[in-house]
Image (cartoon, rainbow, N blue to C red; front, side, top):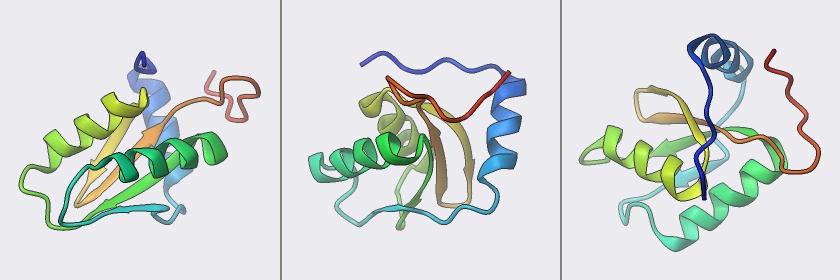
Length: 98
């Protein structure tokens, strides 16, 4: 799946929109598994912009990039152990970035 491309201005807007959001998916000690990827895929379809909580990752940047690459989402931010991912809905995008 091709990754969603966003520029720095769009990334800043998405971070502002996501400020009040709670994490909808949690990655446990097992790391990024097929089940986690499926849950992130569904959450992106439902919400477009999500937060993912990672629990004690060995390399949080690599895990965040792995999640983004596996789902075709844009990695908008990484704050602590929380990853912000964005992928527009394929048929009816709800968030306007322009």
